[in-house]
Amino acid sequence: METSAEATVEFLLLEKYCMRRRAASPPPEIAVFQGLFPAPRGRRLALQSRTSEAAVQGKRPRDVLEDVAEKITGIADSISISPKIASDGDDDSNDGDEDVIPRLVELLRQSGDQLDKEIKKNPDLARFLTNSFSYNLFATITNSFLQRVAPSRAPITQQAQIAMTFEVTRRLSALDLQPMNRVMGFGAQYLQQNFSSWVHQRGGWERAFQEDDHEVQ
Image 1: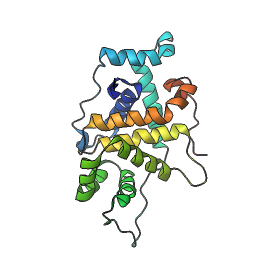
Image 2: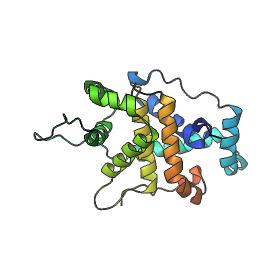
Image 3: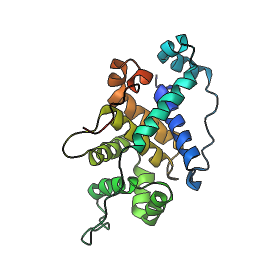
Image 4: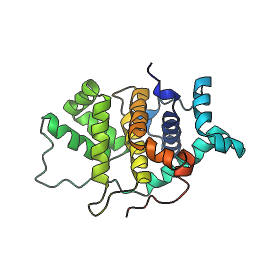
C-alpha cells in the first residue's frame, strides 16, 4: 500500500521550512500557500513515533519540527548558492533535453521573483517542467544542484546537503507549474531515500542537527 508523503516527518519539516522562508520574505508567487494546518491524527502518530525522546523531555513534536527547521534554515543561509555570471559565449537557447537540466539548475540558484520571471521567459523550459515533471526528474535536478553547490576541493557535509535539498524543493514548489504538495512529496521522498539512514544513525532529526558540522570542509 502506498504511503502518503504528507504523513511523514520529512514532509512536515518541508512545510515548516517553507513557512519560515515565507515569513522571512514572502514572494507573491507563493501566496496560494495556505500555511501549516493542524496535522491529522495519522500525521501526529507518525511524528510522535520519531520524536519520543523529545516528548519525554516535555517538548511537543511540533516544537521539535520548529527547532530542526530553524537549524536547517540557518545552514541553508550559510551556503553560497548564487548563480554564475553568464559570459558572452554562453548560449541559453539550446533546446535539447540534455541542456535543460543545467539551465534549470542555474536558474534555481536564483531566488524569489527573479527565478519565477526567468522560468516564465523561457516557454520551452516552463513547458518541460509542466509536462515532464516526475520524481526521477526532481531527483536529477536535485542531484545536479547539490553537485554544483559543492566546492571542487571537498564535498559539503550531510547537514548541508539536506539543507540544500530543502531549499531546492522550496524553490521548485514556489513555481506555479506543479501542485505544491506534489513537489513537496517528491522532496520528502528524496530525503527519505538519500538521508534517512544518516539521520537514523544520528538518533533522529533533532539529534542530527544538534552539532554544527555543516561547514564546508
